[in-house]
Length: 212
Length: 212
DNA sequence: ACCTGAACACCGTTCAAGT
DNA sequence: ACCTGAACACCGTTCAAGT
Image (cartoon, rainbow over all chains, first blue to last red; front, side, top):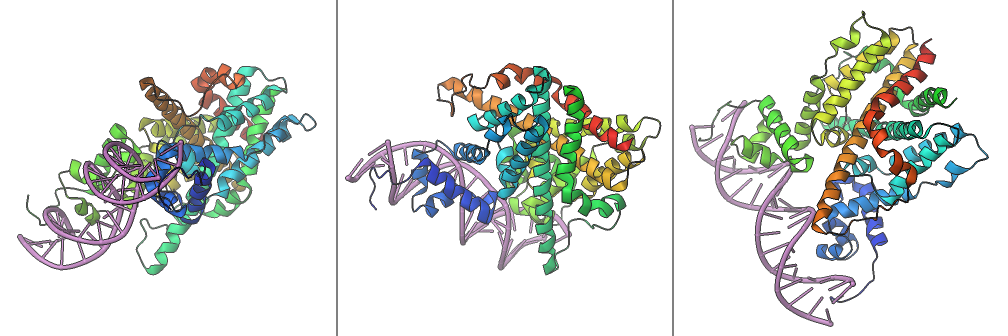
């Protein structure tokens, strides 16, 4: 492989390679050097496709959001509430798919076309039920916040489990997790199990009163 | 300054120095080398106080959460709903205080004593109104998720504004933000203004029906 | 336009050594 | 115990050069 116009690779190939590293080794391991190497390229070759690592990261976010099916959100056959519910659940599913996806989403702006399209679908979903546009925008904002935060807590819990399993070698834990928090301790399992769906339903309950 | 037992510095000093860098230059600029330099120390000196950079980051999260006043949450004089409301608002305020605080919180487990104490106060707040413990735990989870997500969206929006202002030099934007998203466009301002409080009230509306 | 190779200014972390 | 200095294996990014 000598230098020269090869065009053997595309932006999508780079994003795919980056996602594979993200899944296998986590967010911290996603480096332009590593991505380039996995494609058999030199680090600097990446800069022909993306102006910076951050641009690659934003493209990854867009790719992630592009896999969310917006069609289900505008299906007039199903009720308003079910549509928003389905959309929120697939949003969380996409974020939970890849380890470190939330760090990715959190690490920069959410102003790509797919991010805006998602927001648009959410607002339209609320507005279709006769909700004033201002409220529909606020409702969409609330659902986005809830989903993002739930994904962040999920990821934090998983990271906590990993850190705890690192203690098996005898390393002292950072904090003694003695049962000084009985309520948290007693209900950790139940909150994690169906916590997302339950909380989403409460939020939609509260929003429904505004729509009616 | 020669090597030797100096004890001139404490863990708290390191955390403070790290926060100052976080505020001034953002999360990416928080490096153990930079923190050490700002304290007039060699990078390796930090490792006498923290076993790793990640441990320092977790300590920063704990410091951030330690500034949240939990006393207001257990004040029996005010109504249940007002207490949770106040707690959620100060949580958001703390996260909004420092730029990049959410990346910090998102970048690892939330299992420190102050994180657990906050969760405990939230569950107790819901349970005090006669809510079953299982539901109280789920309600606390929902509020934490909503607050964290709202902070993440806030930060993303601010990052988006920064990126947009970088375009002033004539650099081409990553995506054309033509008005292809009329609903989002028309309601961006209104959603951002009082979006947090409004959505929190809807969520509490939905939770209140369970408590009654 | 696409790619290489060398270089610059950084990282986190380890290790031997000094007090 | 606390700190330095040197070293290792990394980073993102720029730049000149080749095809």
